[in-house]
Image (cartoon, rainbow, N blue to C red; front, side, top):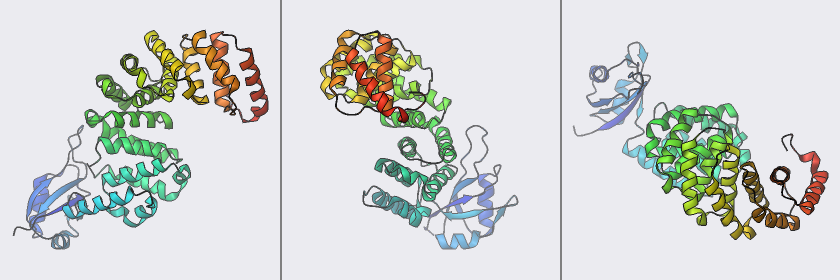
Length: 387
């Protein structure tokens, strides 16, 4: 017969061989054309699942193999997630997941049993992109993350892009820390061997996600730092800003990374928007990384784009310059004049950063301090202890 069907087999003994699985199939009247049992990279033992191509139909194979045991363990058989019908179904599901009118969690509840790695990554990314943080507190979303985490054990389809998207998406919603930590642990294990496949966006997304959630993964972050350092010229201003922010936020030492990004940022600083300028200054000031050429370039660019800055961008910018000992009257005086006239209410965090920056820089700004004092008095109850 020319019929070929690929099955996925689960609960396989870790020491089982491919020949043993083929022999079991033969004993049940099913000819196994091919068998592959993926091995753990560290122990070289099996991972508890495998793929078997058989010379019969799906229904016949499942009927014959039902109840089969190997070394005392009951094997579980199903259609392979890599089979053509399954792949076609997953492509169709992915199209629906990217439709902004689609209820992602409802689709997951209805078709989640058909999801492959790409579908899981798309669902988590799309939910993060839509920005409804409260969805992360639902039981359905927690189940989605838990099921995605479990799928890492049996699905090798989580590529670099999927890993970066999942990390980013899961960081955007409010979700139980333990559920997210389990997912990030699985991402870290899967990402390590694939780090060279990560493009600039996936590297940036993954680093940003770990820093935003405060979930440490030192080994993975070390590999990301090395990878970014090697391909720094391929990163956009936003990628550069997000990466250095992540390492500064997590207080991870990465001198080679900071040096490489500083060099690239000086070269491309004219392409930085105010948000990138502020974030980069904040990161270098917070990390205590000396970069005089970078701060000189950031100052020149910031003065040109001063009208485009919002309060948060200014707060990040001046905090970074003051922390780095790079504050100058040429930059701080026009920024003070801008903030003195700003009609919008400054957030408590911005008030504290701006106040600290001017006090540390020692650059007089009496009118600015008068406004900051007034703001503080009016919204003191909303300040956090750090502010």
